[in-house]
Length: 392
Image 1 (spheres, rainbow, N blue to C red):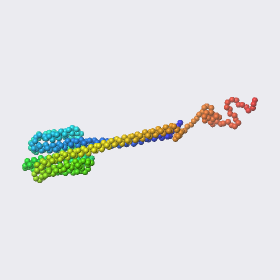
Image 2 (cartoon, rainbow, N blue to C red):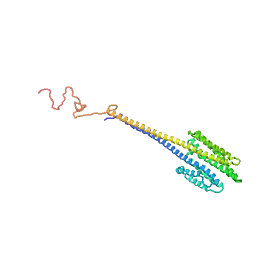
Image 3 (cartoon, rainbow, N blue to C red):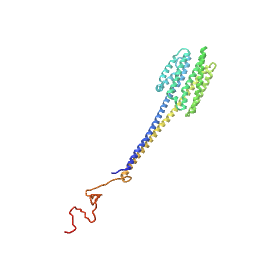
Image 4 (cartoon, helix red, strand yellow):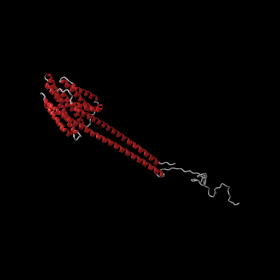
């Protein structure tokens, strides 16, 4: 019977290597899955924001088109402007693609229905103005829905946060307020008495809103430029922002707060502002889209990097496991070739051929403990009769 101590130790080392491999691989896999889930979540958020940017890109021209429609209706033009028709078609297209996910479907359907009814609105200028104010307010509310549902309003990067706030909140309000200033100036000039006083009060309110909104808009753009990682944002904003400021200065002069507004100056300022805001909106939305694309590319790189690192870890662990098993087989093979080396061999050999003369036996008896014959005695080998010392 043979017992090998080194063989037991080899098997124990192999089992321990397997256990250690599992203990290393499981936490690594768990960490990888957590990183992958977080990466996937961020990519989904960016995709949702990109959908929101595309929706805002189609929605921005609509606010300017509605301002044009308001002025045309107050001047007695019954048909819907071509700019409104084109803008509605663009928004309809993006809503069919993203409306369900962004939660805009119901709001847009209601808004589109009210826009279609604007050319049929008749009556006093106050009634026509009120109908257009309702539609414009609903459009501004739709901007807010897109910002919230697309998570643009909660973007973690400060530059995108400032830019989306400017393009989706402050700019629509500024366009609408300037448009109302211009149309209210015409209405003030055509009215008298109590109605004129009421309209003048509304005009003053819109003028203050323009001043406040433009101040917030300018500050927001400056903050975005200060905190952005984009190399093109500052240069792209300069020329368009200058045109916008010139339009605001003209509108302020035309407002003539405290006196009668200058209608012709306000009309010119409104046209300048609408053109500048349209260009500025296009630039801002492109910058936001570019920043989101860069962030998405970074996340894609990190995802690939995580897969590569996990693959390297798995390969290294597999190689280590194979090496350990191979080493164990080599040790066991060495123990088989040299059983006496490094092992303890304990054996007991007993042999008896029946007459006591086998290996390990006693030639003098069947037991190793039988006494040898005394000196002078002749052993009886044959078992025959005893022979006498005398010759007979």
